Amino acid sequence: MDFTTLSAQLNASTIIPEGIIVLTILVILVGDLILGRSSSVQWSPYVAIAGLLSSVASLFFQWDVADPIAFLGGFNSDALSVLFRGIIALSSAVTVLMSARYVEQAGTALAEFLAIMLTATVGAMFLSGANELVMIFVALETLSISSYLLTGYMKRDPRSNEAALKYLLIGAASSAIFLYGSSLLYGLSSGETRLGAIAASISSVEDLGLIIALVFVIAGIAFKIAAVPFHQWTPDVYEGSPTPVVAFLSVGSKAAGFALAIRLLVTAFPLVADQWQFVLSALAILSMVLGNVVALAQTSMKRMLAYSSIGQAGFVMIGLVLGTEAGYASMLFYLLVYLFMNLGGFTCIILFSLNTGTDEISEYSGLYQKDPLITLALSICLLSLGGIPPLAGFFGKIYLFWAGWQAGAYGLVIIGLLTSVVSIYYYIRVVKMMVVKEPHEMSDAVKNYPQTRWNLPGMRPIQVAIVFTLVTTSLAGILSNPLFTLANNSVSRTEMLRAAIAPTPTETVSLDTTAQ
Amino acid sequence: MQLEYFLLLAAALFCIGIYGLVTSRNAIRVLMSIELLLNAVNLNLLAFSNYLDPAGIKGQVFGVFVITIAAAESAVGLAIVLSIYRNRNTVDMEQFNLLKW
Image 1 (tube, chains in turn green, purple):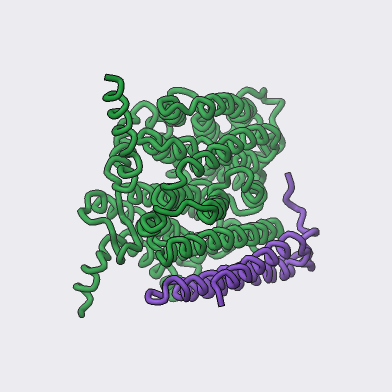
Image 2: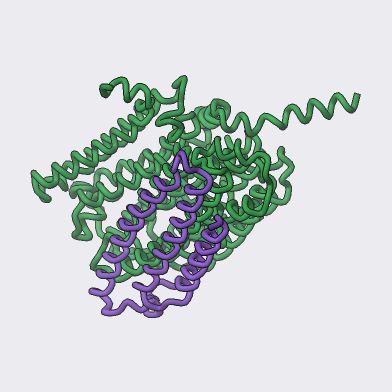
């Protein structure tokens, strides 16, 4: 059997986007080896971005494939996974933009950093489409192990070491717990590893084993999306690791976790749908309350954003537990706008810490007189995260809460509204610190603020990232229709979600007939 | 031999692993406890594969993947422990308190 028939049989064309990124990794590694480190600093970020963007471009052609199932059921390239893979690749591209200067200034090798970052991206993209337990595990570990390495990348910095060790130990333990749950699933389904087949073969049994498997699996997923009470690693890791890595963890890795959550819970656990929706609503409420309340007390910008990202994950989980079409679509829409506003915020923080060397919130006071660009971009991104109209985050939240209200999850929506009011307070505090302070109240870091030198290598990409995220965050609110349509189409084209949502309309129809 | 015995052994091993994870102060011992957890999973998979899926043996294949990835994970773990030892001269978990809320 020759290669073309084999790849046609396996439907291998569905993983072209991942293939492009793997090729990019090889080009960067080999090129770095041959041409030397001093020249690879110049070209490797551009190669990485070109690879990621062409991967996003090739995802467009995956949107309408007739047969999304590939590799004998191991990989599912339906519209949902395509959208998630796009979010992950795009977030990785923006992260590469902001990391070039940061890694160089820290005096570490850039090409290896990019190679590990792209490996994490490939793992996350495979995870969004993985449809089989072995595949899920391998993709999850590819993402996790690369994330541990990235977290500990500043190896001379004890804080980075400590963050990496904590992340590794907690992460490895949680993936072992996840794995124990999936081994139970394998046993309960008497030897099936594909998610659809698992659900089909345990349709008759509803016993304690399934609940235990569900709990273990949810613990593994909740670690990945940093939901309370599995969030303890988040603030430590976010504070200790290099800032571009934090940006990737808070968007790319989290999106992959949500993709895994949707696919695994909806496909493999339809029998206990009420139970997992209940558990996840509890996690969502805890995340929203604890994330947003503890963020009030933080003094470090990175720690504050860590807790804010826990709270944001809580908002996204509202969409996950509703189980309606609008719920899934609003969740995707929120993840899309969250990508731009969160990465924009992180880019500004990176630029500020490159210029001043600090991440403390109090050091930002009076910044608008010295650097209006950071002040504007950071203010817009933070206000958007808080949900101030007419920015993108406002429409994302409105859509989520509207979907929740339609589905009758009043408690979740009310808690979401209250906690987003709390969150506005700590976002505004930073904005006020930057904008309102008089010249004599300026912090020392801002007093000695250097003129930003855009001509240094790696500074242009940061400028591009700031302007790009700033423009998208401000415009995606008013012109949100394309993103909105994208999220809706992706849900309505996905077979797995259609099958899960289908019971609701028939139920209402049968209610109508009994009423007559 | 019954399937239950294997599952009980695996569950016991898993609990020992969790206990070691929670109580150990030495980072190397924590890594060893994680290996215990993964090996408990392997036992589970192999038992299920032998008793319930003798034709497909997907569980054994899964086991090979788990072993491979456990090796990668402990390699990364030991590398991180080594670099933290160079900077701090200790592998005691209680001493790692630079990051706190």
